[in-house]
Amino acid sequence: MTHTITLIPGDGIGPEVTGAVLRILAATGVSFEWDRHEAGLPAFERTGKALPAELIASIRRTRIALKGPVTTPIGEGFTSVNVGLRKALDLYANLRPVWNLPGIAGRFQGVDLVIVRENTEDLYAGLEHEVIPGVVESLKIITERASTRIARFAFDYAVRHGRKKVTAIHKANIMKLSDGLFLECARTSARDYPTIAYDETIVDAACMHLVMTPEKFDVLVMPNLYGDIVSDLCAGLVGGLGVVGAANLGADSAVFEAVHGSAPDIAGKNLANPTALLLSAVMMLRHLDEPAAADRVMSALGRVLGAGQVRTRDLGGSASTSEFADALCTAIEQAGTAERT
Ligand code: NAI
Image 1 (cartoon, helix red, strand yellow):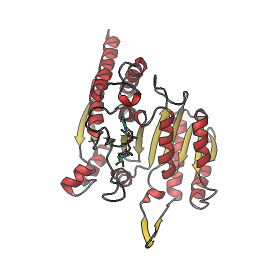
Image 2 (image 1 turned 30 degrees about the vertical axis):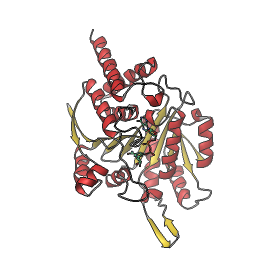
Image 3 (image 1 turned 45 degrees about the vertical axis):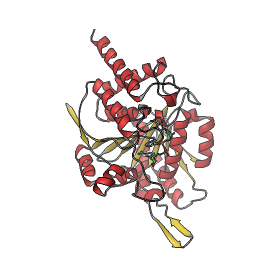
Image 4 (image 1 turned 120 degrees about the vertical axis):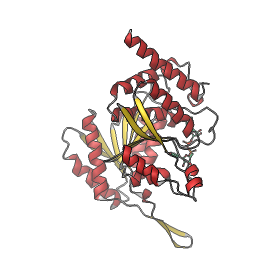
């Protein structure tokens, strides 16, 4: 069977890491047809729209996209393509599993946690205005519907993946109404999942505990802004943004993307590490019900990183993006040959 997937190579290092991942996916033998679309600056310059309607239509059709990073101008210019995509397709759950990869010296070993971030509201609703000159207001939107939906997603994920505990992260001591509602929805949802333990931690304390005893956390569910910050903090526990994958999931479609940005400082130099996008692609393979291919990629990644000979610069090596992709393709093909003989 051929899987038709929308491909957004993105900009900056996007085309380099997506190119590498496409080669690695091809080595698994799974058949893909890629429907390529521009987004962000190149699309804006060509069509006046950073998030073209054809791109949204393509994902509505294929229901799955693999996405490279897209630059967002700071303080001016078009609004974030990433936020726009999540809103247009109602990709309400951002899922980031964080664990140690073989041979990668993170600050901690034994980390195995999952961040579930609400993706559609909170301060990311983009509702900002100037009240009077010198005073601006940014609205934090929290709804019962979105909070319950993300809480149930976290508990369902915990049940499906044999997890033991869900921790709700909040600041309801200060934002009693907004985070208070989020927490109330998490508590109410927890009652329907008696096999999963439930607890709550204030976001600042959670950050301290995460950088001291990350192994004590399991599934964490939180509103959008805390999720954005805490998930990067967690990536830092295991080696950084280059080694953590992510998925944006909705009821109808899913967009798999790396957690890092377009890295303009190294773009076009064949230096970027494609591992984060590859981990997102592995999540995509599982979503497509291709578990054998997903396992093959993970096993090859473990062997290449574990051997320590071929690594990109961010992981202390000297390999280029394409050399790293070559090593992975070879590892996947060798494993396939060994299986057949
Ligand atoms: P960044 O993640 O692009 O870069 C931060 C640092 O990490 C840089 O030193 C970069 O060289 C390094 N880095 C990132 N990915 C790497 C990789 N795969 N291999 C090796 N090194 C890597 O974050 P920054 O600089 O804050 O953002 C740049 C642009 O990316 C901004 O316009 C931002 O809005 C956008 N962005 C897009 C995202 C997306 O499309 N999902 C997510 C985060 C940021």
